[in-house]
Image 1: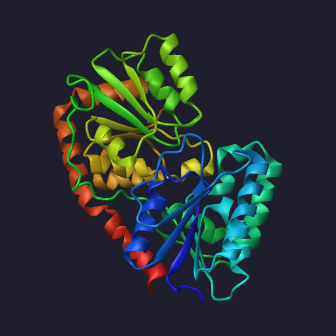
Image 2: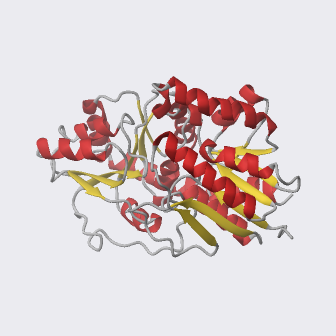
Image 3: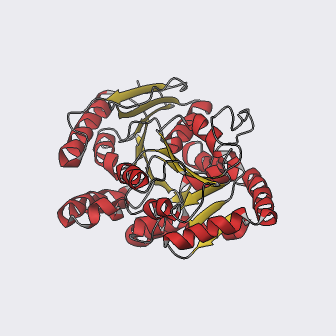
Length: 374
């Protein structure tokens, strides 16, 4: 017999850096759900020792491409088919086919879809029309039939509403409060005490997202400035190559991906966060990255591009600077101006502290209550 509060949550990543999924699963666990979280096991996957619910990570034969997605959905489908639960939560389109078809074997099963982005508009699909059309065919067939859908911001919600006549609810990927964590000093983290530290962070440090230009901006900055890059992504090797070839090793430091709490220790010791995504595709245009909220909760302002969702938050709460160019010299000028204007920095830091008390995951969970508890 199904446990009426058992939910199986499916994700295509290795779970270790996905804060949105972790926060949703914690919410479900705290409200009496028996949570089973499914993801992937990769050679470099971090251990998950802080989760109070069951986790299963699949070892797949392929790690990318069509064979990976086919392998993932087949494994997911049979797991979901033979493991009873009343609820299924699919995260993003790459887990939706397996969840949708497994849900059809029982009318009592409730399928929830959390779409983190406009999947079919990701840059990896833009130059591959055949692959894009395959994913679109899944989306067009399944999305209009979904009853419970939520996403990360209003722009994406409106996009899907216009396209499929299904109105997703909005659950922004806002950070949890950091009050319980004791802040380490720069000395403890082996960071220089006397430098203006700028940070790029996350698991999506990828090509053509503005990171190349930020690194090149440090060609124009002296050694009073330090760029700290924490995380992983496909552009990291190119960034490291540029740093070595241009003798920037004293001004640009790299740290591997780490636990969220450890990363936030570094973030809270920085002076400025960076979010320089480009308007190169619809998915980036409508992005509202969780790092924006991480910077606020760390008490540091952000330098960001003029994308609608990001600019809306920055303008409403006055928590950063909006740049209108990806020219490295332009980026360097913004960083210099902020460093040389302590009054502006102080005001932005104070605004971040105020905004972090309003923009909390705890407040955002009120939307999740409508989805799972009503």
